[in-house]
Length: 352
Image 1: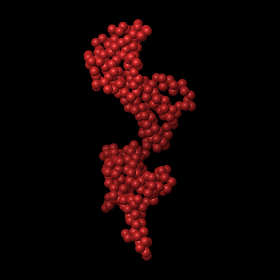
Image 2: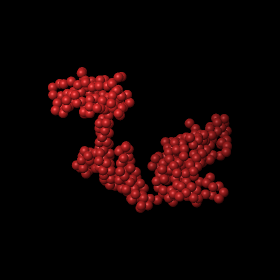
Image 3: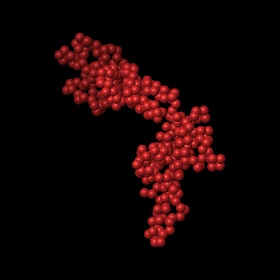
Image 4: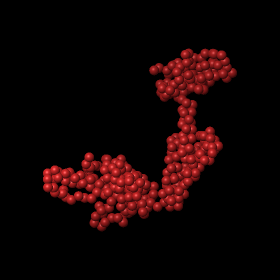
């Protein structure tokens, strides 16, 4: 398939770059890295058979060394073909020369169009004061490539200072909000390691593991997993193992929280496909309401609420509940039977 220059900014996944700098805040390593990622994603979204054909126009945003890490085949910058195709002596030859010329024109035109669009995005994301050195008195930035702008910004503003490296280490100890996915912790650790490598002061895996464990331990949510980790051989203390252990622990924690806060009717509503099969004479209730010993309560002391299950609070019933779940039944009641030394509480089946 022949390339075409008929593309628009709407073909880019990032229509507008995040700001690289402001009038009062200079570009930084972090803002440049984000811009580099966004620009590379945009460039790769525009197909090209050049450079192996798998990375679109990413050569416009990467150094030759960086592109070589992606592909063993170098990206050859398209050269503008002559205005007219090569002449031919026969009609088949003329036809073939015309085809090759048309393809070369389209390849070059697309390359230029993508470069111009990426350059425009950079100039829109950074105040001119930070790129003024590249501006031509007459031609402004028309002669400057996307790579020229990125190289200039990285060279002048992409240095990672000692204070940034210190802040990077501290970032690994940022407390975790349990509302966020636990993966947030491990992404933060990986980002900190990558940042330290870019700053030529690498954080060791052992240091990252210690930081990650401290964050997890101080959350107070994983006492059993923390004990497992502390008693394991130090040889097993890797980031991969830390992530595996605490992801399982977090999954179990969320399951426990869910089943502990949902009432009988809510469990049925939210997870009907995983309910156990009903017993011949009774339905299973939440774990706390499934059975009570003879010494703990009498039948008359138990009440039932559609939303919250059975309770020792005689005033809390389906009809009097003040925090009703969707689909709550005010007329729902519970019955009980006595079998041996255990009272089994059963509830009416909710409507289909």
